[in-house]
Length: 358
Length: 246
Image 1 (cartoon, rainbow over the protein chains, first blue to last red):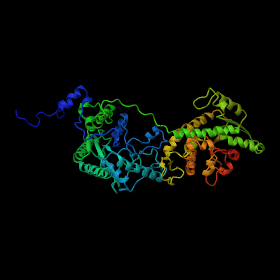
Image 2 (image 1 turned 120 degrees about the horizontal axis):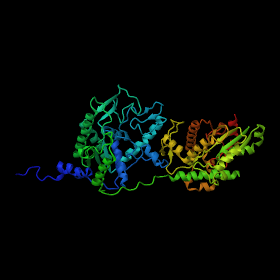
Image 3 (image 1 turned 180 degrees about the vertical axis):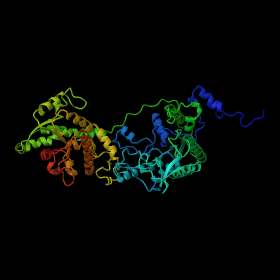
Image 4 (image 1 turned 135 degrees about the vertical axis):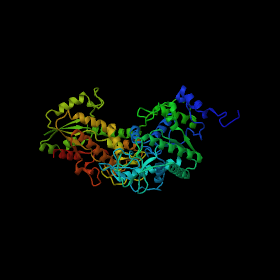
């Protein structure tokens, strides 16, 4: 028999040997990462952004003693639990979920003053104000546009610093469907009217980005990123979480498959064409049949901790060289000594007041 | 009228008025009794003290002092804003106050969203514990007239700094000096808003700082200044009583 292209293929190129076989022993043994595109040092400044699945990245990095790069932290006065509830530390800066490549590009453009949406504030029913591009950043809204504008400028300063100083940017692509303002193309993370704002059918239009659009948005983002940070490397991954709902007139399962397929192809094209950009197979690890659905919760959307663990174990192993290490204990929650000391002084004055009376 | 005054250190302004203006109150038929919640025998020396700093000694004292009283004035807590905003933080901060929504924050300071700062202050023990005490006291005292707001801070930075003892001026926390007057006043007003919310929840009127006690700068009028940066004097106590009895 003569040789042919399938002669002596390495195991990872055979389904039976690379997927079915290992999965029969233990699904956790399936490892679709053949060779990482680059190595990431443990002390590298790793910034994260993306859809809800992206929140797991920062959490698991911390669990293994790798501190994500965060430029927008809460003031030290604010206790950690409260800061977390307000979205501090969830991602590199407090931009909230970034679901689409268009939204990511928009964030970059806005942070550097290259794009100013015509509508930059929405009102709640009680007249308080929220940021249309970060509708969950201020629970209950803020009292004024002034307050919103001040917070936004502080946020953009943090975003500019993030992009300028990061070493690695891990971006999780989540959606292709998005709602936009027809007047200027501004895209929203959440459809107007769902969390805040008011849906205007004359103004708000559905966009469902195709491969070319996602590639163009990612390419432009990378161009802008490299202009301010030439050494920045990027890891692209696709969220395995299905759509909550589709605005297209088709079955949500069909819409999900299309969306994820577009994102997967776009990520592949950009990674193949751009040095220093890698694709990481989170989507494949979670959705492939080898796990027999064990990586999805009963709602068939949420990813189980076992699934997240599998993804992050392989990311840490292949990209950071962290393999088999036990998680590190969570550091003790930070307590600002200022409050304790200041209150001690105030209490002393109160007690002195009583002594003076005596 | 027999009025019971229950609270922490701010009640000493009213107690001072009871002494300084004894003739006035006697002529008005007002008799005053006081329960200071941090008095050692009711506080640090009481082994039955619970997590809210309330024990058997306090309950007994309240019952004793409340006997025959017609009404109660609550001056519980009221210094959490000073713990937060009297001294400049090593990372100076600012916030856009709900009652000045269109006033820009000071440049160069970390901006904290006001609702986040409010959530922190409301949950912080120097505010939260007096809030719990206030709720429990309502069941132990006769006819509450209301809870008083704290006296406003001294706005004048030099007067405020001079009013600190040397020991406090030398404390590590005073290293960056006092917070700017504008911030100290904003934090005091934020504290007042949270106090208002708590009182509303209890169905208790909040008695604001008497207008005559406020200077032109929005801070405590010099005539009402107490012996330190955070307390007021007998004149302030007189104004508080006049307001409560009106």
